[in-house]
Length: 222
Image 1 (cartoon, helix red, strand yellow):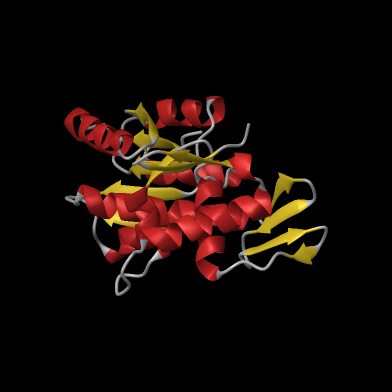
Image 2 (image 1 turned 30 degrees about the vertical axis):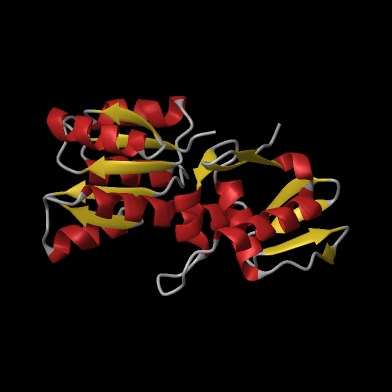
């Protein structure tokens, strides 16, 4: 299931550019062009993260997010805006945003912020994930347990399982997996990855990790 973003931006060209870029990166993007339209979408659709311009018609981004937080809507939010004073940034965080990016911005920077915030949200809101058969993955500690006993897995194997759980039923290419598991000063190793996959399959069930030949792997939930 693709993670879903709401993009509130009244500049049609910028909205279309950001939407196309994020969809190419595997996200589903709903576009709103004024604050009231965005508010309707948030209550009608499942949204994993909001990208909110501030200076938009009818209901500005600050007021929209303040209203949502008052109604206990805790969807992560990033403000995207040309406002750049310290007071504006402060107001953004006071209204409940999780991050703030100034225009003009690089699309790659936006992607990094989106991915980082979604990972934090994943760890905060899904502390224990059931994998069936008395298997639980504890996202805060990065621990897998079976019948309440800790399953002995290496750090990279646990990081790989966390990555799969963040992207259920999605094809994860080797490049994405390498970038997640190996630090910038480490050399990714395809042989090691195959070993990690074999160990994970033994721990959670062979059928849960599907090989897509020459491309990557998919974590299957059904």
